[in-house]
Image 1 (cartoon, rainbow over the protein chains, first blue to last red):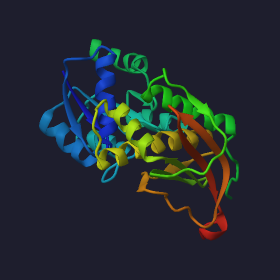
Image 2 (cartoon, each protein chain N blue to C red; image 1 turned 90 degrees about the vertical axis):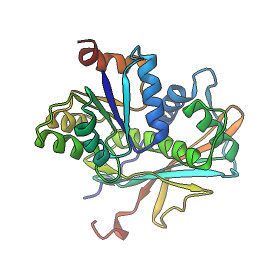
Image 3 (tube, rainbow over the protein chains, first blue to last red; image 1 turned 180 degrees about the horizontal axis):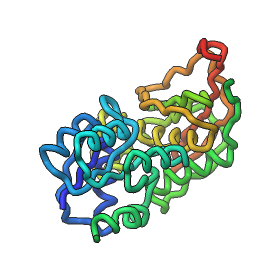
Length: 121
Length: 154
């Protein structure tokens, strides 16, 4: 499977990719994007099986990315990995069509719990 | 109306400890430390704007900022670009979690990172300051409330 990781922080993209391995999801193809606009382009050009996106990014933020994907007809499974895990943000994520919101800081266990239904089917 | 609530010291300490233990390793604990004048090598800040207006900042000596970067990236050598990224991500996580503790709705800014000390707005009032030590290095986390009167939206 192919996973798109969108975050404006290279450090955080590396941590997300490392945590995917630690959670037992090694071996998947990883595609990276630095902001929502780049992620939007790469969803269409790379056809990932899952998008893991930060919320707060320059150019295009995560919730606008999700809205743009859905309005373009993409139903790619989408989850947030963000420092903002309030009930309000979770409700907005869910209303926008996100499957889950993993709050930073996170653990491999939190990744597995959120990703297992998507990646282990 | 602007809410002038402030996060408790215990809440801020819990947030910072969670960030530290998750991404920097639990084997080296973050310890409370006496307030001290830091030789600030790197700092970063985020602001929260909305129902609650505040700023969260982190200040680190250079050696600690570089060690944080090595741990977060799992590399031996660091470059300034990576240090800026890592310190910015630290304050983004701490600030995002502080935002979640405060009344909303509000918006979290992208982090501002500086080699040296990030300037604070003149209307910022510090409401919580965490002095800590990690691996023998001091660091400071500060939460400031921004005064509504000077923003023109009070």
